[in-house]
Image 1 (cartoon, rainbow over the protein chains, first blue to last red):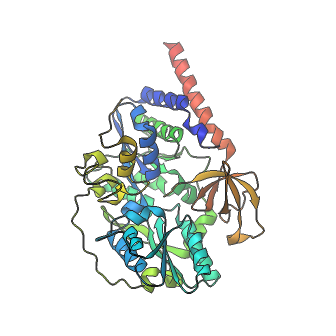
Image 2 (cartoon, rainbow over the protein chains, first blue to last red):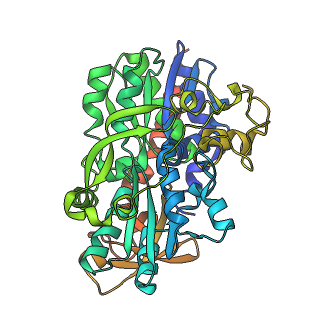
Image 3 (cartoon, rainbow over the protein chains, first blue to last red):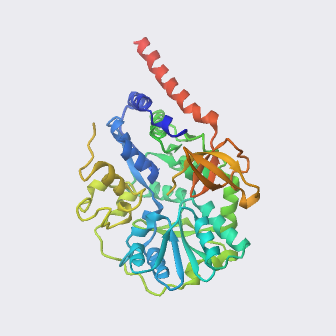
Amino acid sequence: MRFVDEYRDPDAAAEVATAIGRITTRPWTIMEVCGGQTHAIVRFGIDQLLPKEITLVHGPGCPVCVTPVALIDAAIDIASRENVVFCSFGDMLRVPGSSRDLLAVKALGGDVRIVYSPLDALALARRQPANQVVFFAVGFETTAPANAMAVYRAKREGVDNFSIVVAHVLVPPAMASILASPGNRVQGFLAAGHVCAVMGYTEYEPLARRFGVPIVVTGFEPLDVLQGVYLCVKQLEEGRAEVENQYARAVRREGNVQAQAMVQEIFEVAGRTWRGIGDIPGSGLALRERYASYDALQRFPFREPTLSPETECIAGEILLGGKTPTDCPAFGARCTPERPLGAPMVSSEGACAAYYRYRGRSAPTRV
Amino acid sequence: MCLGIPGRILEIGQAEGVARSGRVDFNGIVKDVSLAFVPDAGVGDYVVVHVGFAIARVDEAEASRVFRYIDEIGELKELEDEGR
């Protein structure tokens, strides 16, 4: 596939890895923010190509992983009701709520469906006017324009039986939160390429200055990640802390202004709790007042309070880069993709799922 | 979740504005994709597609720059080796 295969050339990858080794004089810790990059790193063994001085830690860039239990429980409650068709991206179905998951609702006869796009859920609402169609709007900035468009078109076309559970999170406040935490060990970031394709990267410029960290907007193929690491290490070695754009084929500094305008129309910035991490001010999106009638949580008031379940899952530490999946005693034993204790083992972007899938149960070793 | 797949626009429908859409080829698999957020993209252009929406037009000149950069890194090494 064009714009994919050529960025997987092993010889070129080895060349960049060698170049990284040549410019590295001391240990550096770099966080890749996006779960999609985590998967590329683990799948292609990119971390094992790097010199031993470079440590890649995995970031919180898995929206499914950071969706709070209370929202999952609310979704499960809504999906269990009569005349509700509940639509979601597939990743959410196995994420444990406080007592069960959406897949269990489906098994008990609930109408829970996996959709590829929020527009598929909207189309379903048009076809089934007698039912309430609810979409689980999960995602980072990359997904916000699509979900915003579904609400915009629902209003414009008078599709009143459509609503969304909003579980949107924003990347820059999470990065600031990681950098400001006392135990932080992250010295440089690979920023998430597709988040920046939508939002651009001006928001990262004050972060780089304030915390003195290089931030390299990076793509998702092995050569992208390796070049991102190269540019980040080069900055660290030279004592610079700037925003650079490795993924210029898809990312402009100002981002996608049409997509941003649609997000602005529908959503406003709001505080948000991240599962395993806690409250981060201004790190989420909520529907604006004029679109509040499309808020599923208002349309279907939630009946059961959520109890915080006892769990040995260390998702919070993994999402902040403090620990890797193999540091968890439950990994691969009491926690597997079939019987997950936490979301990072479920999502296609979760770090635990990546380690389990590509490295089996054993701890990864450096070459 | 933020997966974006590059595909080539085969045709663009009549609708404009928020309903602008087209057919996009992903290496032989053709899907209907919203083009509302890439008003400048035309037939033959590559776009990055996420959950049924094109979120960016692929800049072909920038796409090849990655490889030029890697060549430059390689040439730097040769220069260093010659200098030894």
